Image (cartoon, rainbow, N blue to C red; front, side):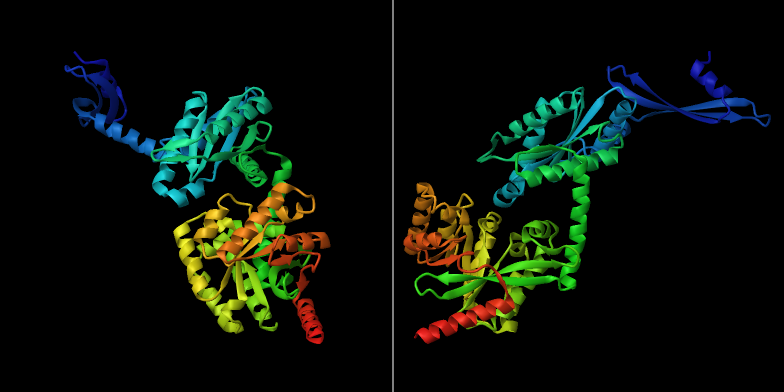
Length: 501
């Protein structure tokens, strides 16, 4: 008796047929078997023999499933990766194209993740990412997709009936869940998340365009501050194009010589003399005129352009300071990216050697954010600079949360008190006055000097003097001036004191 399967093989046009089917063994184990059937024909092309070979392919199928899973899932968190997310997004968008439903896509970027990675190590960072994945899995619907796109970026796609209400609600729940502390062994870590949201079909039904729009919304959320969410708006597209144009122009600005340094004097309150000048960058855009540093410095930091720009500032400031009286210091701001560069010390040494100014005349201003990453390496770098004779100033003191520990650990020579505290001295705010007084007293006890930033009026000048500040800086004494004007000011002040003597 010939089985139907064999009869079909004999009657088929092909001579070789392979079929997979499940079987259950006498031991009650489920297996997958491939039956390969070869039809042997005579000279008249009639089937004479049928050869059947059975092969257990269970392990091969399991391996193929594992390989496919690995190709579509993140190795660390086992969440769907970008490949699977895009595939599911395409399938989900098919429903929105028919008008059956709305779909929201959320792009998430963890806040403060880099700080955790840098301070506690990559092992803790990886543990945190797995904990974030578990927390996200725990409260989204089974029909939703949670994916990890790489680094500290995650995504969620979910059906919504009322996009504004439901997407806002989910974003708020995500932010609430991820802002709660994570207990990671011996460490308790607090992060948060910024979220960008795009909705189909309102923002489009093409997967690539939808992801791009969610990414634009995420970029806006991150710029607006930590722990925020933003929906895509058409204006974001225009702003992103403007940002790309600005980046392109910024890259050419250094080559085309469009940067200039202005200098704002520092006034010593004891001698009433100019003790130094801070170098401040100005960009003369060929079409837009002067572009504010507030508009392009953050972009330079994001793109890494701050490193070559910072080197130019350092070399130019030292060269121009070489024409000033030797008693005048030159203060230059350093960014975290410059600290991360391996070339910082060689560049500084080269700038000093080329300009011929003494290391003691160079004052490098750093903010607390510089100390937040890889503190041991930062301490070693600051100590190396200090040993060269270079002065180190802690800028915008009071805007971070670990200032006192920084002062005791790192080799600072000066504390620059943030303008926010100084401006409130005139308002007789006791908290600000107490902070300024405490900082000055601490500086004196540690043998450091203090500069009051943002002294815009005579009243603030006298209040800073009364609180014991060493120096002041602000519009009351002088606005930032180009190199030619600052040279004239320094000469005039020198002649004034010379004649008075």
